[in-house]
Length: 417
Image (cartoon, rainbow, N blue to C red; front, side, top):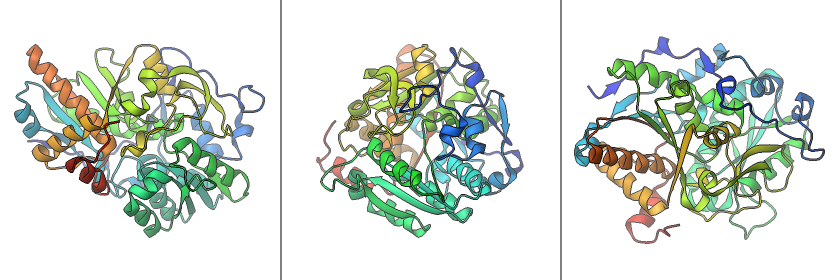
């Protein structure tokens, strides 16, 4: 048996909040003007109080509203799959499992938080959400979620991805989203997530009917994603595994990584590994400091690893990983040594993604290819050591709308940034 399913009635009904378990207390976000710790009133122009409460929550479990569960059941629980064909190709004694988040309507893990964010905004009579998107997976997820709760959705898409991935735009528009390239005032600029966040925050802050929605980084976003790891724990038990030896996921802002890794945080014997692009190596080359989440300096300052809020990364295909900063929770864990971080150039990630496609038959998103690369390297290290390690990674999204990236790789046009 290679696929492990939970029945629909076993979907987790509460999110796991690990903030009380962190090695060191989180430092508070600071107001961009006063540099003083922000309070709920400072965040109210951008977020509903339901999400603000989750951002500062200290209880270990937070119930998932029934209306959110009703939508999540369209595709959750997602399968846990043992990658036996990949294991055989590598000749490794390791047992490789992946959580298949590609089965969601948007094709990635992103709707896990998009649905929750749309619900809490609709519950407070907000009628319109603005957001940024890199590769388009987050914008797609939010457009879908807004449609479920009758909200308007305006998406500022990083221009490099807007040009590279036109069918992501079409998907957003199919669900009623309005999509524009960012930065809106510099048509010759390739864009960055920081600039797109500035565009979206500026839009939301100037309209009473609108709030801003963020697809990664913030505490409440990682909270919503823990449903991934909570399901994976139950499914590994079905597979006869006591625990994984290592949990791996790609990392841009930290949401899919946090989603699968944080529910395993309390077991110190489990290694947690973040995988990022060498061209935007925030955790491995950045500094730990307070920095703005956006380029224009409109957001609160967050304590995180950062390359600087004015950093503009190369236009690699893994648009969802092109972010100058990282989640404060993930940064806290890396700084404390509880989580490892590694970086790869995109050529090596596509090499791994194609090996995965040829063995397991699934075409990973460029972002997900980073986790696949690290998983293969971990499995080869286990082979070298003669250890039957249990490896769990998050298959965070499919690459069926990223075929131009594979076309570039297969025909020698990919810049190995």
